[in-house]
Amino acid sequence: MMPTGIAGTGNIDYLRLQGSRYSVDQSGIRHLSTIRPLWLPALRSALDPLHKGYVKPEDYFTLIHDRSLSDTLRRLVFESAGYGTLVECARASDDLALPAAVESPSSHIGWMSAQIVAIPTPAELGIVTARDTIESSRDAISAYFDGTAGDVHVYVRYLQTGQIERKSLSKQVRPVEGLSIGAALSIRHELDSDDHVWSWDLRIAEFKACQGGEYIITACNDSTSVEFCTRPLKISSDNMLHVNDNSLCSAIPKFDYMLLGPSKAFIHPPKVGEKVQIEYDGFWYDSRVTTVDGDEIEFVDWENSPKKGEINDIRASHSGGPNETDDDNLFFSEEQLTQLGKGTRRLWRPWRRNVDTYNVRPYRRFHIDDTIEAPVMYPDFRFHYHDINNSQLYLPARIVDVQGDQYVIEFSPAFSVHSWWPGRIPQGEEVDLGPGSDIRLKNPFDFNRVAVAMDLVRPSNDGPRPALGVQSAKPSTWSSFQGTHLCELEDLLERSLWNKDRDDERAGG
Image (cartoon, rainbow, N blue to C red; front, side, top):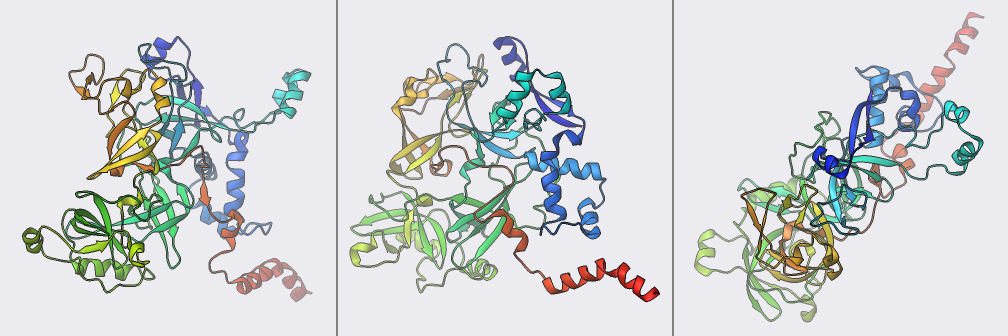
């Protein structure tokens, strides 16, 4: 038995009380034969990856391992349907309505983090059974053939509000936290001194969403490739499905990362106190600007200066990285920092000196005029407000200023048409966290402007994107033929396998 989504009944007040317009029937699908599209292609790919037209016994037993065949097929169904994976969904007008006090036409905008909690039914997959055709009228049968399903809907649970919604897989779903093929990122390396550094820039070449919220990402640059497992959403919610099968990530190193923006250099001058990043020996360090002097800045480490020996340990574990440089000025003692109050000098606009080395950049490569996505303070269907620092509702915006480790961002004024928009409330005015709550939130919005922590924004990622299965920059059929294959030996073994009976007959004759 496998879970499916079903629509609830009752008026809007009853649905709000229930907490969702939809629910999950844990025994909705009882027969694997009715949902072959969810397991047959995956089974064929697993047993015959090179498309030779037959299955080796050892490949079959490797796939089954210590499970039964039905359990193996159930696992393939869950993987194919994305059950338990984290995605983002576009809010839509058919989402559970907001309270009347803040409800307005097309009141649901933005993208929310969610988890897929059900398996599509045969009807939702566009499968027409023999019984359907026998019991249907002639017009209905024609409609089956003329109106083949071009899309599949999935049932997701919003992690922050708990409601279950039905979403179009091709129009309203995308990977979580702005992940996409080709996106730039840096990997975080932890140091023994409780500090961290960021790797050289990489591009996402492939990723896969796993059950329970983990993602496997392959990122590369001109000289190296890194595969790692990560958890993009650092949250623990009672609404999440917790899946114990993490076998895919068990043998892969785990790292945190940050997505990067488009600004590799400063167009607008950095400010004193601004958080920037300084490159040393192929790694990027979070730093604070202490002085701006023409084309140069002076800086100190944002928190504590890492020890040089720890950087050498990281470099030794990542062969193929960028070449070392001769700049050894970053590593100075805490006593020197205290006495001098400043660090070394770097060029923030080197092109003015005919230099093409860019070793100072805006933090996360985001700066003024960049288009981004940012969280918004908002009320849910229970009239509970979610603070901007914890919000999972993201909308497009533009950076208009930088203040220390915060961006001042500006949303489209068109958003103010919505009755719930926080910019319609005076800046600094307090609102109840929820009906009858003693906790109050102060509104940070000044109409369509707000200051937000640098780590909360992400690159602009407009529209839906494929989210289920392996997303890759290379054709999917290439993977089976890449890597080490002893083709001649395999062919020899296969010929001996198929010719064994014939050889025995000749020997007996």
